[in-house]
Amino acid sequence: MHKNLIATALLLASFLAALLFVSWFINDLTEQSGFRVLRQATLQLRKEIHDRVMGDQDQLRALAALVGREENPASRGIETILAAYETRGLVSSLEILLPGDEVLLKNGSRRSVAGLLSFEEELRKAPYVSNVETALDGSGKKVLRNCVPILQNGTPTALLMGVIELGRLPGLFESRAFGTVCQIYIMAGDSGDFILDTWHKTPGNSNALGGRQAKAGYDWARMRKDLAEGRPGNIVFLSRTVGEYFYLHYEPLGINTWSVMLSIPESVLFQDAKRIKTALILLISGVLAACGAFFGWAVFNARRETKEKEAQLHLTRQALDMEKTLSSAHRNPDHIRKGLSTVADMLTAESTCFLIFKNGQADQSWNFRKDALNEQNRMPLHAAMELPALRALLAEQKNLLLDPVGTARKLPPHESEELRRMGLHNLMLALVEEPKGALTGVLAAANMRRRWKDTERLQIATLSFATALSNIDTHLAIKKMSEFDALTGLLNRNCFENSLPEYQTRGFQSLGCVYVDANGLHELNNTHGHEAGDRMLQGIASVLCAEFGRDNAYRIGGDEFVAFVIDADRETLPRKVRAVEKAAKGKQYHCAMGTAWSPAPFSAYGLIKTAERNMYASKRQYYSGKADRRKARI
Image 1: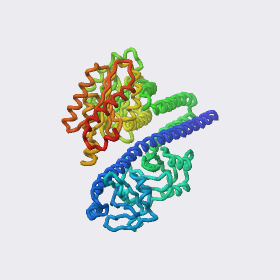
Image 2 (image 1 turned 90 degrees about the vertical axis):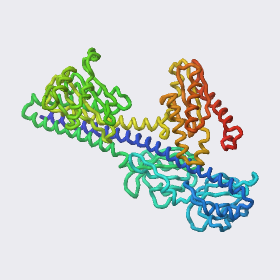
Image 3 (image 1 turned 180 degrees about the vertical axis):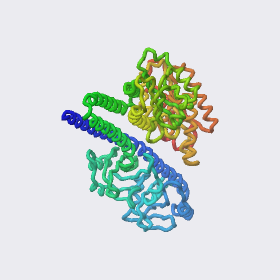
Image 4 (image 1 turned 90 degrees about the horizontal axis):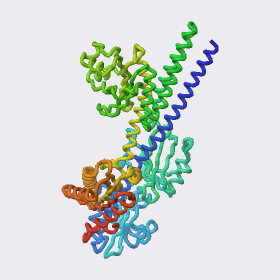
């Protein structure tokens, strides 16, 4: 009895240690995954903010050109433009800084700003976006200024200033992650001033953050250094307002020394991890309860105690091994086959399978058969799930035991006969549901030597497979975000950079490259709005995808695309290029395209550079004789 007590205590300790380890592992994995999601959301928001600021600056340049046609920058016509100005961008009003350090306000009045702004100094900095300043109209509001020079005959005569009110910014931007709205911050790295803060009523300064407790492993000083030097990073801190940790990622914005930040509460980030840990606790609690019952029964029957204890320990080891194996199945799908082998041992089954449904349709399947030599001669077990009555019965009951498969009250005779024709004598099925509901799985075992009374053992296994299913779903979502461009659906620059070595090393006989740039995108954005520009990019992307295939077409920049043609003769590439030009022209779009082709051996990087140079030659020809601002860049 004393030995049994010691063994039970040790078993309990091992379960608790395993629970602590798995809990730590899940927290660490969730934290890393969460920061990856936050980084992607931050990068998307950074692009949106940067594009809107630069878009406003383009609009201000156009207005400055219009103002520059007036002989007097403070004429009645200019006052009318200032008073009537409306925009969908960030700028809420216009002001003009005049020589002599005077500012012309939108109401037509003039105000001296001597000591506040120097016309000569501000003109030397233009075009630029200011840091936080006080409004010049006497309202005391905190503002930013997007400034461009006004030229008359090529000479700067005044400065057009687009006023951005800080109080309006929280209502203009939103970012979501993990199904909820994130807190958004923009901070100037040199001064520490918050330009945008959706969490607090008024923006403050980063000096106030130093009093908040940072989580172990994170440091406010390191964050301040990163922000001052324009580097991305992460920090976790305790919020005084709600009393919980917030996870924050920051990225340099590319404007002044600004950085954009997104934060999310720990309760949101770890909501799935908590569910998984609860499932693990329930699993281990169930095992411990079984061990307790076993120990009580062992008092009356020592021989049965030893036998049952060994069996229970073996099952526990299998469950823990399977849990460990399946925790990394999203990175190595072969681990699912190892898990199925463990299920087959647990149930004394001849074959097992795991089938994943996505949106109600079979998406992936794994099969395991102990008699591997005859595997090719037998229909895979997942084919049984094509029987409609069997699927409907499983959806209703969640767990199903057919022993024998010809149980007439559960299945129609023709489906029972079909199962027997497949060589199945008995069958155990369990539904595996992923917490977020995006994927559903079915775990099955067939031709079990032992006759089971219920599906309990298979249900224990489903907890591990549910974890794998959740990890697979998260992995697929992250992979899609990291490899695909959200606007066009093409592979993105990140995927492009990762794929280039494969084009170089996979032993292709030839490689062709086309480098594409959308002509007129900026003009289309300025005249018809960014939605029209987005449609243009989507149209060009669809044409490239149709000609070059989804696996070899990339969007590598704002209006730049690259596509490859593999193991094709020299004439194939220009033929495809002509097809793209024709299709794009049919959509009222024009592309500048450059190509390069080479048989093996070749340099993929060299082909890209050659195609890019040829594209710029095409673009120069397109813009030849046109007064277009992009010519200077070419």
